[in-house]
Image 1 (cartoon, rainbow, N blue to C red):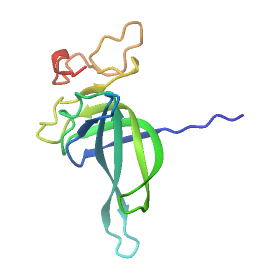
Image 2 (tube, rainbow, N blue to C red; image 1 turned 135 degrees about the vertical axis):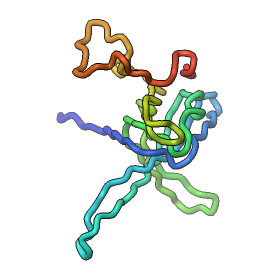
Image 3 (tube, one colour; image 1 turned 45 degrees about the vertical axis):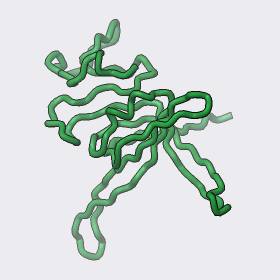
Length: 160
């Protein structure tokens, strides 16, 4: 049987501060929206314009993350698409498509950052995803000089 893939990668800006709530079982659920923008050429005028798409993101089990995910910040999100439906209070069927995040990384350059550094891992369940200045062990060092790279946060700043 062929293998299927459900993978989403987004780099965009947060539309509002992340909100964290807890399920009845005590699991943290953080929700936020990301704006991704692309440039398209208007066929009638020949002018370039920006088109923005909004994506709703859900991140489980990272209750300390919301304080770092604030409006305007640039963020990298990797996860999967999820579709669900529910009945609203008027009895109407509503459909929702969300990105269930598996990786979330703050990037520099927005929301009061100077653009220098400012990035860092917020959620890192896979050990293969590390900040660039983290020791790589036996892994090959990527091209470029990352010795002077400062992510702008320390281990004490990470909420987990």
